[in-house]
Length: 192
Image 1: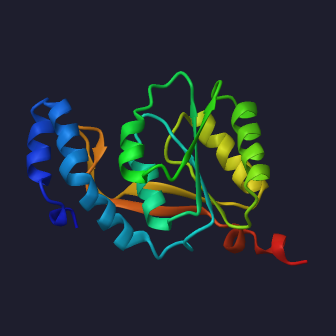
Image 2 (image 1 turned 180 degrees about the vertical axis):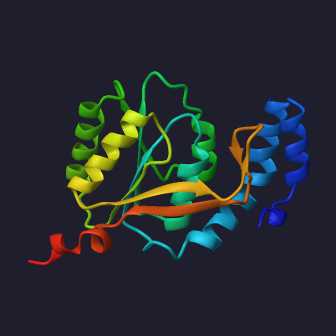
């Protein structure tokens, strides 16, 4: 799986030798496109394409880019806090302006839940997926509660291989996990 990713060994060598800026540059310039393609091939069939995707963004844009590329939403709304330094260049490069950023004043339950509810009203869709991979734990918990309350699919980008020294997943080992699907986990809600 990870052997299909070009420049992987070069990236590992740079990262393990403490050349983190060069490793990150190499990752986004040469590896990430292959990671996206690998992820989409392995995971694109797991969920229906289209609909609306709500993503929670922390410091790493990679997981939400992967999810967006795999499910190809009609509308992608990303929630983040003002106090985090978000490098929009990676979002712009890989999502090509096919997203909307919503800045929250803080990561409280009220801010997150209210922002998601507002976006649900502005973008009504019967197929909403929430990616809870990024963001602070309080934001993820709020997004999960919102998803359960409003019958949304909840997904998480996980991995099968982890590089402990770097505290990163092995590029190419990313997996899309469906955490909650109201049609499978609580079908009685939809029986009326």
